[in-house]
Length: 287
Image (cartoon, rainbow, N blue to C red):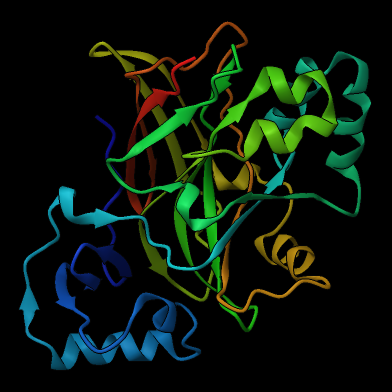
């Protein structure tokens, strides 16, 4: 089991079966007078959440089965080839077009692509899916940035950019099919509400369990992210609007070896310090 490093003085926002919940310094407070989308796009969200912690009665922590993905009507987008490990993995899987990934790693313009609508997103404890037409599928643990309708990055979550590596490696034009499908994105367990990105030393850890044993594990830190959060968000917002806000996944540096592929029944755990642990299990469409 992997666990996050506990930190004091932080605020987390959860989406639960009975509505939003805010956590501050270990205390939990229910939000009854606002929906998720209104909170997500509140320009004074931090102050509003502090009012709940001062005025609302404390409640019980959420049970794991009550947690939902922290998303309403937001879109999910993603950035690629933002870590050296991602660059080398994408080059290896794409023999005839490998130079494209080498060039985008150092280019001024990053790779940014659409990832998921809300109904394609899996929350904590829910299933992520392997495409039925892939033989090589992997999880991609990533820091997710919450961006409100005004274009302000106000929080951070854990994302799992499920990817069919054989499909994206066959032809770069197949990237949408490799990335966008039902249950293609894990997101949660909460939003860490903060106007500043996590520290570069923040750890990201991945464990994949199969039949009760560890099938793969890896770790990295945000210091290996080549581009800044501000840069990636600015490119996403260039000539693009998000009336309900959005999430931006920032890329991965943890890539399993080429002989590894996910299997139905696997359990994926991703931990990011100060945010928490996102756990999903794996399913696959019947052929």
